[in-house]
Every structure is written in C-alpha cells, then in structure tokens.
Length: 500
Image 1 (spheres, rainbow, N blue to C red):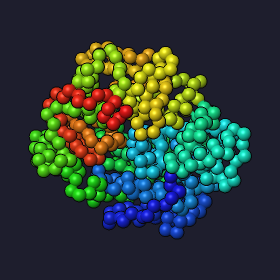
Image 2: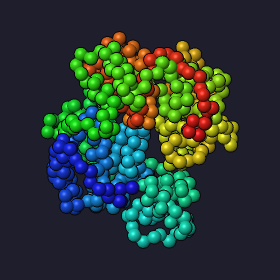
Image 3: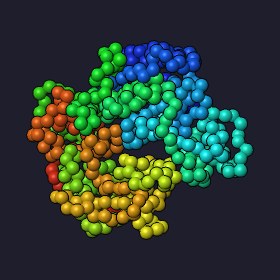
Image 4: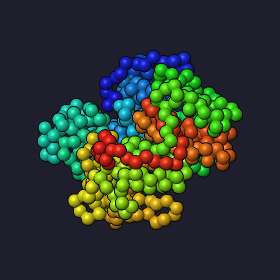
C-alpha cells in the first residue's frame, strides 16, 4: 500500500515546523527523510523516546501521519503490517498503530497499513510452507516461490490482492487459502521494534505507552487534546506529561475545507463561558444557513442502519435501540435480516486460535460494524456482512444479545457456546464511537443537555463539551442534531438503505 509514493502535500507553517522537528529526531535515530537513506539502528542513547503531535479536529494530524508513513517507506524502512512483519532484523522498520480497530480502519482508508497496539504486542507464527510466500508477497524477496501449497496462478492472485490492500492475510485468503493454514498461532513479542506512529493517542492508557516504549526506539503520538480521555484517567492524556519541546502543536484547521459548519461548531466549544443553550442556538443558526447541519425533531430510523445514533448514557442507547426495532416493526424476540450489529469480541479459547485467526483475517474484529443476513449453515451459526471489507458474508457461530431498556434481561437471539459476540448497532455511546467516522451522523442532543446539567469537569473542561466535540466530529459530511426523544417510522425496508 505504501510502495507507490504520493506527491508530497503542501504543508502549513505549523505542519512544516512539526515536520522539521520530526525529521531532526528521526535523523538522530538514523533515518534521513530528506535524502531517503538510513543507517543501522543502535541500541544506545535514544531508545524509548516519545514525541507528540497534537491538534484539534481538522488540524491535519492524520494527513501528516500518513505523509510521514509514506516518507519512511520511501526511505527504505520496512512496514510492520497487521499480519506480517519483516524477518530480516537488520532492516529498519516502522509500524502504524491505533488503540482500537475502528481507529485503525480510518488510517487504512488512507492507504496506510495500520494495526492495533494489541496486535503489535503479539506476532503471528507462519507455517514454514508459507513463510517464503509471505516474504515474496510483501516484497521481502524477489524470486517467486516454487511451492506445492499454492499454484503459480494463485500466487499471482495473492500478489495482486496485496498490492491493492496491503494485507498478507487478505491476499492469501483472496487466493483461496484459509487463515488457519498459514498462521499457526500468535506469540508474545520478544524482539524490539524500531519506530511507531500512533494515531488517536488521546485514547492511549499510560500502561500502553510504557509497553510501546519498551518495544520501540521512537514513539510518535498523534492526538487531539479536546477528545475524551480513557476511562479512569480523569481527563488526562498520555502526552500531557511530555516536556514542551516534545509536544508539537498544530493550530491551523485544514479538514473539510470550504468553511465547514461542522468544524466551526467543534471549535466553538473551546469558547470560555459557553453554555449548552448557547451552543445549541449556534447549531440552529448553522442549520438555517448550511444544509450540512440539520435540526431534527426525531431520530431517523433508516439512517440508524448506516451509522449509529451517538448518545452519552447507556440507558439512552438501549431505549433508542428498542425504539429503532419498533419503528421497523421487528418482533421483540427476533432478529431480522438487515439489522445493524457491532462485534463485541470473539469468545474463543486458545485451542481454537486458528478459527479466531481466520475470522480476524476476514475483518471480524472487536468494534467491526456488521449487517445481519440470516441464519447460518449450522445451529447457532449466523451469516453477517462485515462493513468495509467487501466480504459478501461470513458464516460464524454467534452469541447475539438484544439488550433491553429499564433493566430487563437481554434477549438472546443466538446462543452459540463459543464464537463472535454481537450487540445491536443502531446506537452507541460517544465514548465507543471515538476513533470512528461516518458520512452522516445523528447526535442525540437531550443526552448532551443532561451531561451539561450533571456539571462534571474533565481536565478543566466541562464534560458535555468534550462529549459534544467528539460526537459532532464523527461526521464527515453531515451533522444531524436530534432534539427530542422520538423516532420516526422507518420508510425503507431493512436491507434496502444501501447497507445490504
């Protein structure tokens, strides 16, 4: 994915200043971005160094990260990918990481092969028969392997798939090889790595940063100081404690050019003394002038199939899910094709790791959005489509819970003993949505009003402001501000809104 070097982007003054500092620190680590060369990594002097690039939504952090990743690859550094890493230890390398799968997928949409921090702590063990194949696919060796486990045509298909998607596992799967055939397990990392670029660093926990410092010689964090800190950290971000000369601030706003009303509202939240009522009035004013901001008296049940309603309180989430299902006329104890789901993890023991690997290779990971397609091929198996993967459907043993409001027992609509755990995906909390984006987003304003009345403060900023900031910046093109606890009856049958 990074083999084709894009044209360098024009940098603003603050981006250029950050780039200069990053280039200097990389040079101290033996990486010359200007000339495109490297020197061997040394074990002394700069191991565990941490830098941070911070800025609010639209300041160009992710664009800068993506450009840096491309420049590192152009300088000859090997990419540590989600499912494969170079075996030549003398080669310089880098990894692009995020705290969650959702955050990693945003980078993947920019052709950057990102993975989660958890996945980098554990490394895949390849079957010896596929080791040479993986090296050839990833460009680690020039000679095409001669092997009995794959035909020459299958090898070519795998190579072509890798050049489009940058994943060794997906490439092999595209050639008809099961994940359990080529990855035999995972092991705790023993060897150190080189350089890490970490996006969404506001979500990073202190322990995770320490783990990264133990593994990498240089860690570069990219984070938004206005977002929500990890639960239990009282609003503190891991980059807050860095010295000033290790924090590079981006101030100029770039994303959603053309006087974006969404970014205008996001940055309005930084105004001192602004209360919720004044902010909501500003939302109304923007909506009267720009179609990219919409005031809605009720939730849109059709849109909730494509992107979840964003809420603060869990009880609101459960009530909206129940209202969504009622709006579509779904019986309370049934699940019908077209309903949105969110994977909440894989409940599989270590002895079934091959099955886990195969499912993860097809995109079934925690946080993945899915559409229910119907019963699977075996009892307690269901067929789901994982959004964003291109897969027509995955047949998987499933544990699907439809949680109920007001403390009622969840409805268990699929009860495999082990498999993928799914929750309903029509609504999610703003905390869970952090790191994701959708073209159109509905924000449940009554919950933000309730947060403003709670009076909670996080790191000197009212909690409702942080919640509102994260919620509205999840919208790429259109923000829908839902003002009342009502939902309109669905007008499009499930599966007919473009999600099927």
